[in-house]
Length: 87
Length: 269
Image 1 (tube, rainbow over the protein chains, first blue to last red):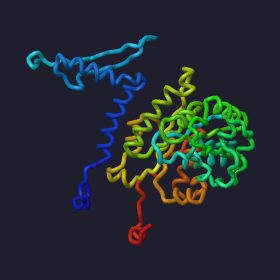
Image 2 (tube, one colour):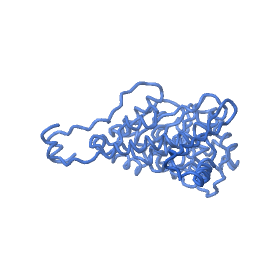
Image 3 (spheres, each protein chain N blue to C red):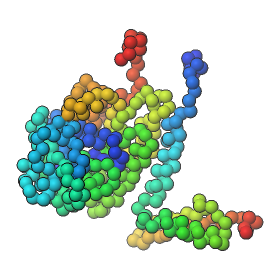
Image 4 (tube, one colour):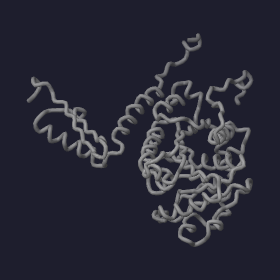
């Protein structure tokens, strides 16, 4: 760091924030890509049904559509809370 | 066999038409026979950037609907006799472009030209889809800015699944990124995504980096594609991009902060 840098106002590097946000977003959107349009809605409804019985957060349900040969495989991943936190 | 190149972006205002005009002109400068087609039905603008707005008699939709021949609708560039422009229609009928109609026109162009450059409208609607559907190669124009980068990725995803090449299951569209409005100074200050950042996020090779420049606006004002201004860094950067498109290796220029001399710093550049 040069001497002059000491007098300069240190700003947070906004580009680094932008990059971080984009990396996450793009990865997320790519994962959903190619799936049918109803996938997000279905994910939400499945979440609602599970919530009737167990208290879980949005990110605890993961719905993925994979291709296995000529078959589409719908994979549903639910992270249930530890038993002592259950209602 | 002619190559169809789509210039697209998703987001509007990033420089698609400026890029289409300069890439098409650059290819023509290199001796190729080039047709550049405006797919932005309803919002014709390529003619204005190419400086031939007063010579538009027939347009793309006229050709599709059989109201004139393709030859009648092609406007010969006033500077290059091997460069032709096909203007978009100003009709508000969104369904004026059909898959069959576009395919027929592109097939006819392919038999007569080395390159067909398709200037896509913004968005991911019909016009944008048709512009990329038949493409062999895509130039995705992106600004170093969050919404543009995200939209580019969306467009790349659509191209990977909904183009003719993708549907036929063969080799996909060859994709390149072209970064426009790049400011090395703002990158150095940490306020603009760098070339490395954009490459990392989108995972695609970069065809060219066009520096932010006042001369681009001046060129648009005059109806002269900026590539013809060989003094302008943006023009030189487009010429580099064209060379790379033709398979030549060129180092990236205008990516470092320009060191200013004392005089320039005192009196302004």
